[in-house]
Image 1 (cartoon, rainbow, N blue to C red):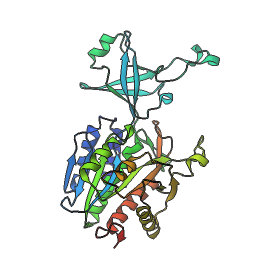
Image 2 (cartoon, one colour):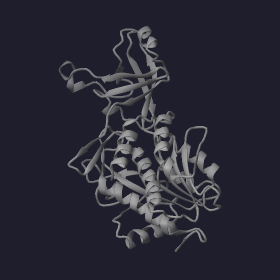
Image 3 (cartoon, rainbow, N blue to C red):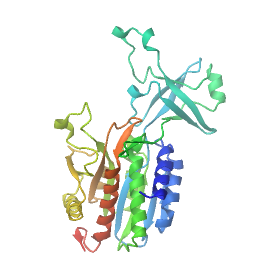
Image 4 (tube, one colour):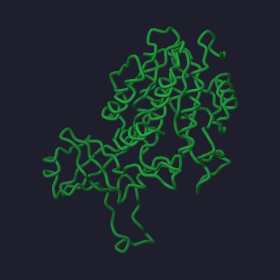
Length: 355
């Protein structure tokens, strides 16, 4: 990873991008890919798409989702304490003692999720941790003081946690799910440009919004692009860490390569094409299976527009939906490589034939 790419990685992932409020992250993302694309579109809800060869009839999507889990302010007490509800798959069990950011029209407000000290709680009948009991504190003594800061019901809250690295192997932080996907598809565009690859089809590099609340951004943008093929990247679980059940959740490990998924929404021929390319280029990969749905934007693309051949390339992730999500740098690199070599060899003259 060169200096320019790493600077973008940190700038993009350290920025907040809560579901429904992804605009600042999308600006950073679009600015970075601008030299590598011919055109771009942004839909009404904020999905950003960089386009190479916009006039080409055959359209291929590579996609990640731009949003991160967050909270909505739902109730403010007379004493200035704030209660929240989920915006996406936010985990109330990790919230206590976390620093947070309240997003308002006036700017951002620092806050913390408070929790009573252990020695004042009766441990045998301990306080139940839930969205009804976790409390946000922005240092105010009344609801009037909270309101004067521009904080109100409906404001979005994110955790305050920047990226770090462990053992020169792992990238660690909040919102790798799936902003790291946005980084990887942007890097794919950069590498195609650097290698001066002349693609014989239109490539739509898509950073979709609102995946965390039902794949909504992908649904909307697929109807607009009407792609002939979609390659989606998202995260999956590293099941080697404690508390995972490999019988139920499969056997994937960070550092052993991208995970290719078998599922009803995944087009079998397209999946075999990816496997063939990975084998030919000695890109390590792992396999997984999903029952009924993948739970990713793959489902939205696959079942749109009368059916779009779609496949899923996943990044093994430790501690998903926490502030310390961990991804291996080797896996990040290998997903970018797989995207790049696959697109370089794709022949639009036949949906499933290689040059």
